[in-house]
Image 1 (spheres, rainbow, N blue to C red):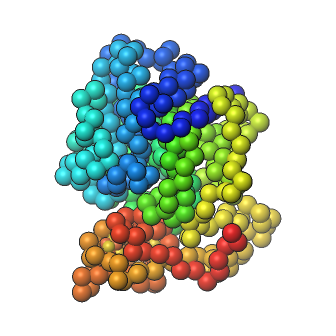
Image 2 (image 1 turned 90 degrees about the horizontal axis):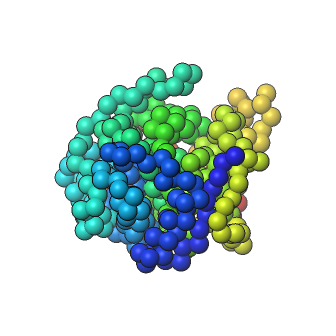
Length: 376
Ligand code: SF4
Ligand code: SF4
């Protein structure tokens, strides 16, 4: 049975979030996991330097509630670590910690500045033999993954599974986009990373979630919820349903189902009763449905080639907004973006439609163009 705990969490007032986290952890029996001298690492979503109210990063109040709960139970060693987009260097971490509101809270926990990583072997039968994982996650005795609930331009959903892509150091992340340009292959890799990191508990901050062109350029959507589970696949499935999305159409979830990582029949919801909204979350302009799921297996080879050509969305620069920072070029896996005259130049040829450029653009100057629009 996969328990998924859901709690109405009205806003980010500390006492409201403290109460929700305490109820989640009590329901999941987290206290029984704790051991004297244990090293705990918390992995928030720190995609890039954004303020808490922009709904891009894990809200500091949620992180602080988890820290307080651990401290009250005698846990001394708590490190907060993530590898945001862009280069994994101490200066970039300092900026992200300051802007996201975490720096101001440091004391009961330690913010990570160690930018090293180690190779961690994957389980037998995985496509990848190993992953390079940032040190604080390798060194941890216990990992708490605190995701932010968002739509995502490439993977449609960013929650517990996708948050663990941040275990991969800095600019090694775009290399995986290049290695796996097809969404199903990329999604399979995300599942392999999640299994290799093997977080003990995943919490989702969905008090203020994001819809539209997430994970960075979407709009805040109030949801008033937090989630927690030991099974992050089941939890992402439940969260997607409560966003009004069809989880089976999201490749990382359809693959998790195929691999038997959870089964909807074995999911038990605990906590507050919540219904899916009447108006589903707005999808990103670039969202690609996993249409292959609905095509009979014998036709999938040719259907895939044709449909990918027709449906593939591409990035489009709104040149007047571009400030020439070069963050898109830095994160472009095939290195096709060039800077010219203080602006980005984004060619179509060679583009793998990963939308890392859109994800990293601080001024939302990159939109989506496509020949066919998906039905709303
Ligand atoms: S141009 Fe943008 S979408 Fe295309 S490959 Fe580069 S980062 Fe990905
Ligand atoms: S498109 Fe965005 S990320 Fe790229 S250079 Fe312009 S402002 Fe920077």
